[in-house]
Amino acid sequence: MDVCLVEVPSHAGDDAHPSARGPGRLLAAGAAERFTDRGVPVTVEHVRRESAFRDTASSSAEVNGQLAAVVRAAASSGRLPVVLAGSCNAALGVLAGLEHARCGAVWLDAHADFNTPESTRSGFFAGMTLAIVTGHCYRDYWAQIGDGTPLVESSIALFGARHVSPSAELERLGQSAIRAVHWHEGRPDRDVEAVLDDLATRTDEVYLHVDLDAFAPELAPGVADEPVPGGLSLDQARTVIGATGDRFRLRAATLATYAPERDRDDRTLRLALELIALLAEYAGEH
Image (cartoon, rainbow, N blue to C red):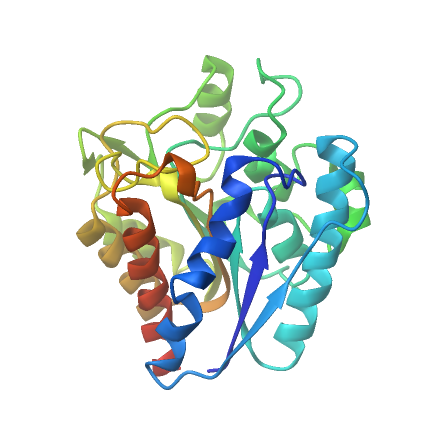
């Protein structure tokens, strides 16, 4: 399977944020070569905000509109879009570029990203991403970017959540049909593969979304938000991603929130490249 590697150097439209430099750093460190070394043809695309930064909503809409067009072109030519982004908000552009009515999602994140304008305390727009793609808020806004068909909650599995705030977000998540596997002191609260087996009864294709803050801070100190203790290990990620590739067709994948200047000894960089190598293995087998 050919791959389209997409650099999105912004955090919800902001190219001055520390995580905006993460995608470029990954490319410079050999992200594309992780695919070509395994015999996987890869093209590299770049998404840039063309106008001045105005505000998060409008600037991220501009970036995600461009991203949707790149993803749409890649998917229509049979390539797997792999997106390197500064923010989880890029999921709006990725999914808007895909025909995703039957698509589920495997989402790795320390946070649920399931706030709405009514539940959030901070107003942090990227923290509403999963709520937006499931149709809970900003439906007209997302539809302006591309295909705004909501994902079906029961076709989504969330792994690694351990900082769900405020309590209203935790309550919303608990009342949803999303399969949430919370992490406590580095361990999942239920069997990962059983959750994916259950998900496979509902869909045969997924969007894979990886926020690097899903990982333990010892592995990934360089992320956009404050690292949250007790996250995934690399072996646990291999299990989740490997089992996902075994059970589902990947429609697209995103790796988000790497902030190089917050990294220590290139730990987050090395982890991210290992995850990209896992995606290269999947592409090489399909």
